[in-house]
Length: 331
Image 1 (tube, one colour):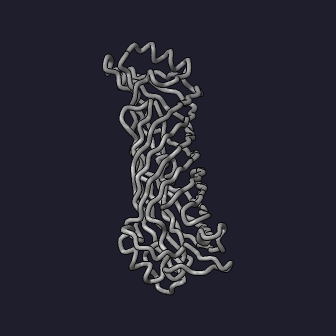
Image 2: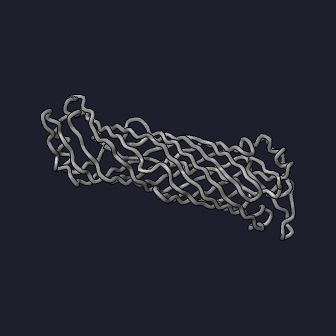
Image 3: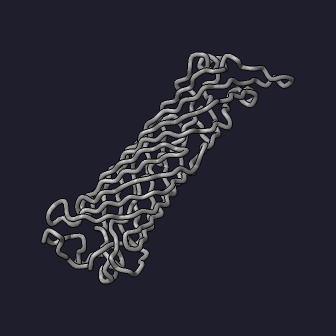
């Protein structure tokens, strides 16, 4: 009986791309918006900035045209490592069983769960590319581990003429430990005007958990709007130092029907004794649930230390608590 909700994937969702610059140009461009002239330029220290390279690259497509219009676009390829810590509430709608040996017993048994809280940690590797100046696509792979905690409300056994209460299950703690691998991909649309930028990130992931049959599918959508500040280079010859700050939201839609082998669960003694008494070696749990909230708010910041390296962090709050941090190399 699992109430696991890997929003990880989310997890993984926080694996997103953010526009890397701003524009002095007065013309709006649905693109990663950037400043300067599209050719190397002196900074306040008299050095040459590398934030506006005129070098022609195959990617992004239309990149040369964007640079000719005065926009500075990021290096086309990126590799990043990210860490997410997540806390959220789950609502369990049904806890049932599948019993090949005693199917009538399974249909008569019902267990009710109380408040369920899940916490998880996810480590993610992401590889991305700017295909167009306004479109970034990426693939990701990650590892998640976590736990969910529930206080059972009890249960009943349907005798046909009456329902027998299973009071021995009431207030029993039910802690589930889980781990698994996540893989998937997504894209980011970016646009902006001068120092203001917006992004819309969408990713879809699969997660295989050790206590479940099959995998968890997760759709994460994250709109954001922010502002960029540009400073003199922190390192000589490495381009201007840029800081982006933003606010936004995150939407999660995740698989809500889980099945797995009961023997893989670390059940409390009273519950485990009850399951053993049912004497069905092929017994599986069958759980239906939903997220207490699909939307939460986010705030974040990204610091471009050099043209080729940046650090990003984002915090989620209001309905779901999360912390995400990543380091990225671009080339």
